[in-house]
Length: 127
Image (cartoon, rainbow, N blue to C red; front, side, top):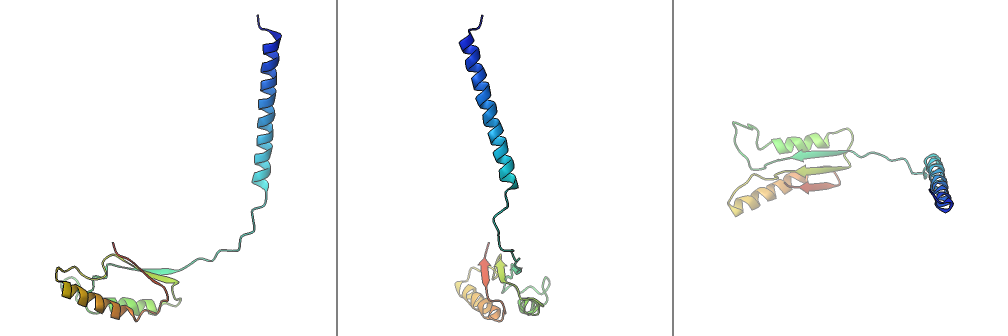
């Protein structure tokens, strides 16, 4: 036989839990219908990626215009009707070599060639 005090305690607990669920539900409904904070319209951005330029790679069987390819890519970027917000170079900028002097020469040539880019912001992400 259950005591009346236990039944009363259980009934009050169920009542409070139910009331809490109703308040929570109403709060969630009100929150979901609240107007979002006014945000200024977002404008997109436009960028160009050049990858694995490997300046200094000189195998005419694979790339017959190895001395002109990077320069043509830069001319292509400069000729775009809309200038990119930024340009990112990914991958190898110069072709690998164990000779430190050749590596420095290739990097200096690469830097000189890309001076012709008409893009304000240039990022480098060598991988």
